[in-house]
Length: 394
Image 1 (spheres, rainbow, N blue to C red):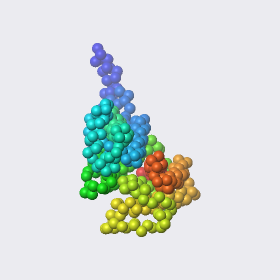
Image 2: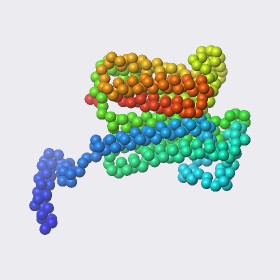
Image 3: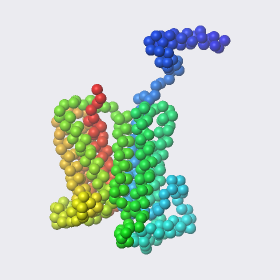
Image 4: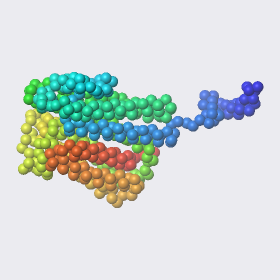
């Protein structure tokens, strides 16, 4: 009875639908379309799921910001070498008894930072730097979970398009790579140097690679989120707009390089070499700018040259954003795009003021951390503006 009832009512409609679809495009396509109509299912991904995935990407990019800022504070407080082991699960539980803390402290005492710099450190002082590094590592694990767990859920729900699946897989893989790169960086500060009097520090090359990959991860996540959340702006493709679009991309690249150069400044403590502005000491160009041989080494290993480069890049970024703003003044564009340009101009001058203040005050930790955070805000606004000015596909 049930079967005959279905055949008399719903079955007739399905059968008619299948016969029409067979005539116009084949049985497989007809079955898919009819089943969709009968079940009332909504195709995924769609506008609603895109917004959910876009918000997830924005949250993920925010967690990366937290990791970068916390990593900067860890570096400024010289806490990064306090944890001398790396275990993905085992180290998630911190020491809970005095005996466990003393055992952890004894492991730290076997490495160069304690022997050369912190040989008079107390257990309580060690606990502070250990907790700083522990917080950074645990935050890194939280970043990984923020990417991987929702990615699995959205994938199973069918909310990711084919292109978005490839991008999400790449982002999740990059998060894992970041963790390995972070430990590779820390290891460089735990190794015994040929000259026992060298100040123990992580390799500035590895530090720059770690920061650079974090910035790439952040930019890719933020761009994906903006693409899913913000409707495209209707921009005219005039010659002036083409110039503005190219200039905005170049400015964004300059801001990225300036932020990355800060890793070399931090890695070499180059902010403590010349604490004057605009001159470096008594000169515009210091005498020891090319003290190392070959000359190329100075750009990555000479603290004076590294600080000089960061200054020049910072001034160039301010100049580029100012020119970008001037170019946009008389061009018709949406309110949101104008807001992005105005915000970028305000933040670049604020960031320059923070950088100069940090230098003149001999790099106090709160101010230096704020300056590093400002570089991420500046990079975010640059990316937002580039996204607003992008050429739409025809």
